[in-house]
Image (cartoon, rainbow, N blue to C red; front, side, top):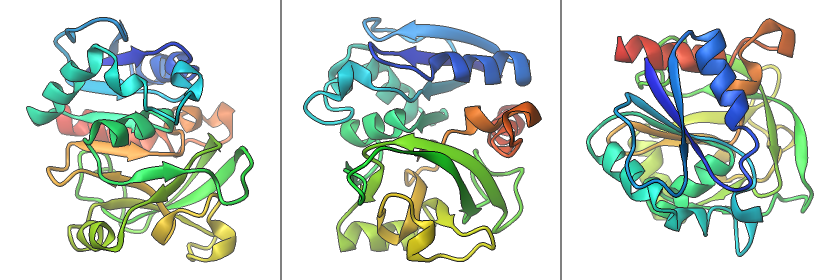
Length: 229
């Protein structure tokens, strides 16, 4: 697997993604600065978490206009995998690669903790190593992770099997208490209709080794690697 990690001013999970891909997955990884206009020849583009441009205006709104994003959109339109994590998810929403928008957390507070996700679609580039309804223990860290879309878009996501992860309880139940930010339909991660672009608020790179308290995030990287190999 040959990957690149896009870096914006304010990115703070770029090195975590680099470590997960290079040191854990033994993949080739390249950093790409946001002012570049061309991507290196890679299989996978990672848009990492952080606070691109200080989250001014709204999350991802300025990063969406960085020169590199035209190349990321072109990469996605060619059918190659793109994963946006936390702020990366927000940026993908702003570019229109994924539908919907992010609102402030229901609590109006920054939330940083481990949560449980239920795998809703295992027939994707990003989940082919997981079993249906597999529970993952992966951390979140965001202030604007409240995913929103209108009822028509939600219906399309549901019928198109584009909801990949939902927030659930430790026993796998969907309820208000297990939804950390108020996201509609407890959505934690979605894919585009082509199935090659994933946006998720939880951080798989922070749960890719046992020493970090969870190994579950590595299953996502392994799924991508399996697809590309």
